[in-house]
Length: 71
Image (cartoon, rainbow, N blue to C red; front, side, top):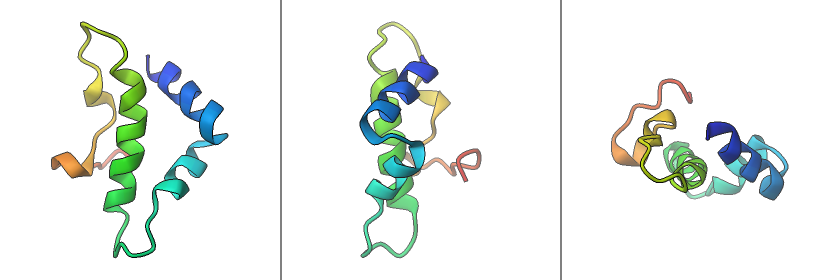
């Protein structure tokens, strides 16, 4: 499932870096919002699978996570 979500992002953005860069807003003082948008886009691909608890795989700072793995 994780690889399916990453594959979907790669088809749309060509790389994970491009997804992250597209999430950056120059008005932001840090990357928290960009990480949140990045996480939401990847989790969007994971949530297509019903009956499985998969959203824990990619943490989101907008939900209070520290995102240690992502940083």
